[in-house]
Image (cartoon, rainbow, N blue to C red):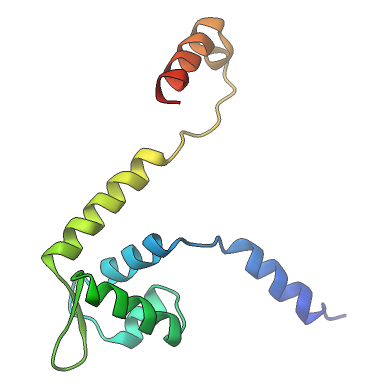
Length: 121
């Protein structure tokens, strides 16, 4: 009648993609574009408290994030630059969706694609 608990949670874990350190820091910076309490960062960036502590310390030491007297967090100008560069790089690396139209199968299109790929590899 009921599913095994382990199968339910293992399915949920498979839906969550692992994030790199840079992606996590960028997510924290994005949440902190406005003055934000740590608890809100934990929920919005999907982090545990201990993970947040480590990443906030790293971002603070790097000058990307500042802690205000009321213990809330706010992005710095350097943090805004980091976030801008990270988002640009992320956009550049995203691959277009896999198309299977007749145009995509045309030999000229395939040759042009191969030439572009060879240029950057």
